[in-house]
Image 1 (cartoon, rainbow, N blue to C red):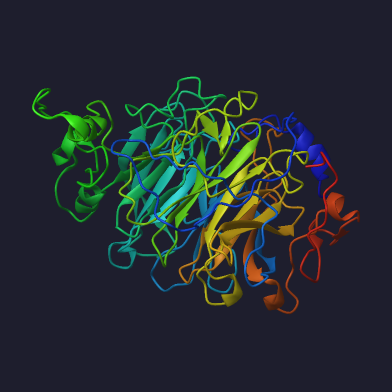
Image 2 (image 1 turned 90 degrees about the vertical axis):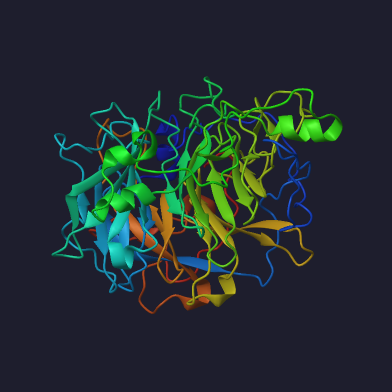
Length: 531
C-alpha cells in the first residue's frame, strides 16, 4: 500500500540533497520572471559573474499552453536514481539502482532480469557504499564513441574508501552487449568527501566531448568547510576533464603510470582555471589592464574546475540542440534553483553558494538587501506554501525536451521534486522573459532522471527516504516517461494524482500498490504545509 505523502515527508529529516523541510518565516508574492531570457551574460574578468536580476518562480505562463503526463515504463526497481542511454541505436535505457546495480530496459520497455553491472559485492574494488540515503551509485555516462569503443563511466561512493567518490571507466563485455566487464574497471578520478551527503554525483559528457562531474559542497549543512567558494577544492564544483588517457589504456595504449599525475585524465586547455601559477610582473602593467590580469590569477585553483558556488548539483544535463548546460542545484531550507549556463560561456561562473541560495541571502534570515554574488539562477521555487503555493524541497532536474514524440514540449526544461512530486517547465515566454510554470502535481517521490538516445525524457521514483533503515533499499521504484497529455498511449498507466492536492483518494491497483489515473492529472491547489 502506498504510504501517504504527509507521513513520509514528516519522517524525512534531510532530503536527497540535504534540503530540510523547514518552516519559512518570510511571506510575499513570487518575483517577476527574469528579463532577456537566453541573452548572454557578461562575465567580469576572473571568477565572478554578476547578474543582478530577478528570477522566475512558479506562476509563470509558458508559450503554447503545454500539458504533460508521466507514463509508466517499468517498476520493480530498487532505489532508482538516474537514467542513461548509449548512442548505439539499440534503444536501451540503463537505470541506476543506488545500491550498486545498473539495470537495462530494452527497446520494448521490458526490464531485463540480470543487471548490466553489479557493484554490490563488498569485496569488490569498486564496491558501492550506500549506508546513507545520498550515498551509492549516483552517476553513469556513455562515452561519445561508445558504439565503437564500448566504454562507459560510473560515479559512486566507494566502500573501501569510506564513501569517497570514484569515477570509474568500464568496458562492455566482448561476448554480450547487455553485460559489462567488471574486470575492465579503471579509476579515472578519486575525490574525498568528508560527510555522507551533498555528493552531487551526476556525470555527463558535454557536446565538447569532455566529461563533466558534478560534486556537492562536502555535506552536513550550511557548507561548514566553505568549499563552495574555495577554488582549491573539488567540492561545491562542476568539474571538466578529458578522459583520453583512460580511453587509451582501454585500447591497449599507454600504461596508467604515463598519465599526468597518475590520473586517468588530462585538463582541457580551455578550462577557466587551467593557467595555475605563472610569472607576473607586479609593476609591468597598470590601470584596468593590471586589474584584468590579476583578477584572473588563481595559482591555487584546481584546473579541473569548470564552475563553482554549487551546493549539491544532483542532476544536470546539456541541451542537445543548443549545448546549454542546465543544473538542478538542491538548496538548503528554503529555496531550490535551476541554473542555466549558455554554450560558449567559457566557464568560471560562480553560482553563489553559500552567499546565496537561489537568488536569496544565506542564511535566509539575513538582511534581504545582501549583495548578489555570482550568477543567479534562471528559476527557483521555495519550500513553503507561504512563499509560493507551488513548492517542494529537493529539485530533480530532468533536462530540456528535444524528442520527437511530443513536439509541443520542445525546448522546455523540466524538473520535478522529491517531496512534492510536482513537475515544472522553464522556458522563455512570449516576451522573452524566463517563465516557470507548474504542469503536473503527482503523488510520486522523484529521485532522478535522464534522456533516451532519441531525446525522450525519463523520471525515476521510489518510496524511499531517511526513515528507512540504514543501508536498505525500497524495491518499489519505478521508471516513467514524460509525454504530452494528448499523447498518452491507449491503456498506459499514468502518474497518480496527489491525493492531498486534489482532495481525493487515489485508486490503487490490487497487488501493485500503484495509483492510476486515465487522463492528465490536474494541477490542484495543495493544502498549505502538506508537502
